[in-house]
Structure formats: C-alpha cells, structure tokens
Image 1: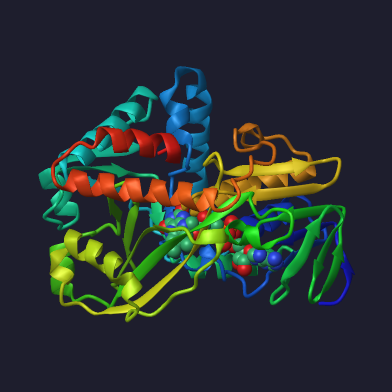
Image 2: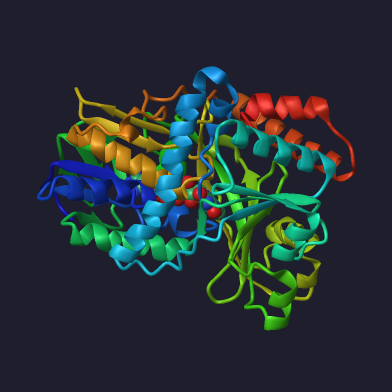
Length: 433
Ligand SMILES: Cc1cc2nc3c(=O)[nH]c(=O)nc-3n(C[C@H](O)[C@H](O)[C@H](O)COP(=O)(O)OP(=O)(O)OC[C@H]3O[C@@H](n4cnc5c(N)ncnc54)[C@H](O)[C@@H]3O)c2cc1C
C-alpha cells in the first residue's frame, strides 16, 4: 500500500470496521476513509461466526432488570431490534447475498432450571413492555414442533433475529464499502495504532481520525494488551441433510436455535441444508489466540456431543467442517464505542460473542460520533470511555478459567436435576450473566 494520507484510518476488516466505514462514507460522501486488514476481509470472527444476527446485546438484561436503568435498557434493546432489521434492509438495497432470513431465535429449556431462567427472561421482557410481536412463549409440544429435540420442556422464540451466512455478509459489506469510496488494504497488519497515524508493515497512514476495530486480536497490539480478552468459540457443520431428516428436525422457518445453558450453544440451518452449530468457550493463558480446524480434531468432540444430545437423529451424519475463532470480552462485560475528539482516536468492540447485529449498531454510532451527528444511538450506554483493563497474568487466567469451569459445572448439575444456587450466584456475579 505504501505511505498515504486519509481523513479516517480504520484498523480491522470485520463487521465493526466495515460498518463504521460504510456509514462514514454515507454520512459524508467524499471523506477519504482507509481501512487496513491484517489478513483478508472477514478473517476474524466476522467471517466465521454462527450467523446469528440477533437482538442479544450483552448487558441489556442487567439494564432492564433495574428500575433506574430500565428506560435506557429499553432504548438499547429497541436499537438492537432496529439493527437486525436494518441489516436485512441494507442486504437488499446493497445486493448483499448472505441468505438473510428473519425466522427468529428459539431457546429451549432442557431441564427445570433452564425452564425457570427462560420464564424469568419472558417475565422481564413483558415487564419492560415487550409483547407478542417481540417474543413468543412455547410449551413443550409447540417447541418440539419447531425443533425436533426430545429435550425441550418449553422455549422462548424471540422474533428479532435473522440467520445469515456470516462470510457472505462481511464480503458483501466490503464491496458496498468500496462502492461508497473507501479504500481497503488487505494483508496490511498494523503494528502501531495511535492518534494521528497507523503504522503497518505495508506502509504508514496519516489521518486526523484513527479508529481501532480489532476485537479478539486487540491484545496483540502494543499498549492495549489488557483492554479485552479473546475467548474462543468453536463450531462444526454437518453434511447437507436429507429431506427425511429435515422432516424430523423441523426449523421450517430457519429459526436459530440453542438451549438454555450458561455455556452458550447456537445453531442454524444453512441455505444448503446443513446444520452449523457452535458453543463457547475457552481462554488461553496470556490471551493467546488458538487456531484449530478440521472435523477430525478431537477438540471438537464436545461440540458434536452437544449437538447430538439435542438432535439425536444426527448421530450418523458426517461432520464435514470444524473451526473456531476469538471473540472479545471487556473487563466489565459490556461493549464499548469510544472516541476522543481531542486526539481523534476511537475504538469499538467487546461484544462477548453477540456481535453480528451489535457491530452494526456500534459501527453506525461511531461513524455518527466521528462526523458530529447526534442520534438516539449516540446517547446509548455503550458510548463511553475506555473500558477498565483486565488483570495481569496469572490472575487473569485463574479468574476466567474458574468462571468458565463453574459455569460448566452448574450446567452439568442442572442436567442432573439440581439447582446449583451457589455456583449460579458465582457465575452471575463474575460473568455478569
Ligand atoms: C466461532 C464464533 C461464532 C460466533 N457466533 C456469533 C453469532 O452467531 N452471532 C453473533 O452475534 N456473534 C457471534 N460471534 C461474535 C461475532 O462474530 C463478533 O462479535 C463480530 O464478528 C465482531 O466483529 P469485529 O469486526 O469487531 O471483529 P472481527 O471480525 O474479529 O474483526 C477484527 C479484524 O481485525 C483484524 N486485525 C486484528 N489486528 C489487526 C492489526 N494489527 N492490523 C490490521 N488488522 C487487524 C483481524 O484480522 C480481523 O479481521 C461469534 C464469534 C465466533 C468466534
């Protein structure tokens, strides 16, 4: 790429960086926006996620639960609903062929404790004024008609959620960003990202506005090693399934599906008739990022076991793909959009694994803030200062490993019909879940 000047330099070619660039060029046509991506567009989580374009936004539930913060929680939740729809609208208008289909997301309960939590969520949503147009309660029979799992005791279908092909979305978005006039450089890893400039092995960009959108890879950059931690999520995909199997499984409206455990599971029916399914998560000492792929890697066996437990008819079906990637968690567990007008430096991310719609909302807000346009989005609570940093190692590893282990143990105890109150309290307190 060589040295260049720009009005705005963005680091990171995932949804966050690209939506920010998209809205910057739409709000201010002619603005010189340059985006640097270390590998290829969509190399990070954006190109390999579970395709849940959903209204989950980490931290909303806590805001909804307290009377004092309820109004802002409702505003945030409605903004995420809108982001889910806006992505669909833009896919149509920008001709992004990513199989966007808004069939909702179905969380089912596989035991009494999960059923209790889902009922609590429904009660909370109703107390906040969300109604049948937003979510639908399903008893065991209705739930099993939607998703042929023998485990379902009941479920909650949240309507503001769409299945997408994540890689097609990020690649199509990149083309739309280029059509808007931004310049994208691939294979251009930034080694220094600071106010006024981005230094990359491929050259230096000087710009009065510099924005970082590096999510799970952030700890690799100097000076921000503890701003977020990378936690891995792991996924598998089956071979295309026969019509007979689909008759048993259901998902006639391509509903996204998962159960009610703490260690999140997420599945979708793909356009070519496979199931793509994943679960969280692992943290590696020192915020190391682990790359694994291939269905023969035994690392993916627990993910397959969870899928088979839910849908036993898949026992003999081949798993043809397996992969994973890092998502980012901020110390307080909340996403952030930061921008310091004095230095022109901003950062965005921390979606804790619910980033498909959230990155759209955050990127749009960041673009509005940069050009100085106020909107309902720029007043939302994720617009804030730099998040508190994580602890140093080995404290960080010990803390995160304990939370993940307690979460898994609590899920397992619930499967045995127990209510692990102490572990539940510990997990909620430590993980904000
Ligand atoms: C396996 C998996 C499944 C998931 N499933 C879902 C889901 O179903 N629904 C959902 O809502 N969320 C899901 N997520 C989370 C979601 O994918 C992310 O929150 C979202 O994609 C984040 O987008 P991003 O642009 O902020 O980060 P990323 O997509 O990770 O992009 C960051 C980019 O920055 C680049 N980069 C990093 N460092 C540098 C540097 N120094 N110089 C230049 N470029 C750099 C990286 O190469 C990368 O391309 C999942 C995540 C994973 C890993």
